[in-house]
Length: 251
Image (cartoon, rainbow, N blue to C red; front, side, top):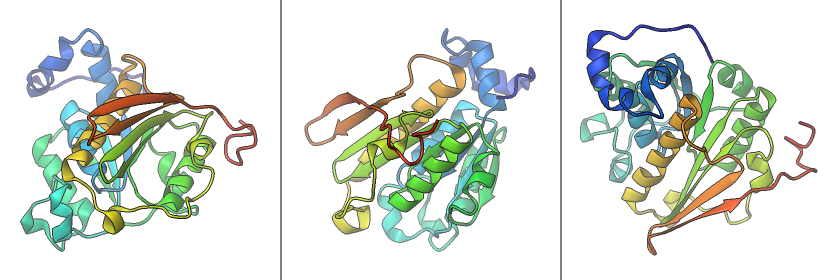
């Protein structure tokens, strides 16, 4: 990440006051946030709250990639959007909301899908990648590009009442955790989801990205946090690298 010092405007000092007095963040951490470039892949249930908290925290540049438009069924969990946004491209509606929240955060929009053909060109422009998509082919594509360009990947996933969050920085990678597309892969559209769960997991992914950027605490590297909303329980599983992984096995 860029090590050149940055200056804060007077209103930024007040805006980030609670960070600046936090010993694990302080001035250096807030400078790191202002210089950071984070790519949010997918402006769905996870990307929505994650982008809100990253912008609120003072991340200097947010990239948003999504080719979908806002629909009425999104509003149950995708809290960036309002009823007036229905039919608009998600990234355009999200940019307007994020600019209103924090004008000091620059928002870059990519109204497209991320594919093996464009993933590396997109991802190499950013310091951290946050993936909240529910499509395994997209997840594999993002993971492979992050491994190839040594970019930290914060991954969040949702399912009915449960969610998971992990941070991948080389080995093990996401494909060590999920070697291939599950035969009965579930999506929100197929099986449903409790709306507030997206807020829980999306906010957790934002927190992990902030820890990666500022160096605070211990990010969930080589670990997977699993949250059960029905039972109100959380557990953390250690992840092992697969030496035969086609993505990170040679790294």
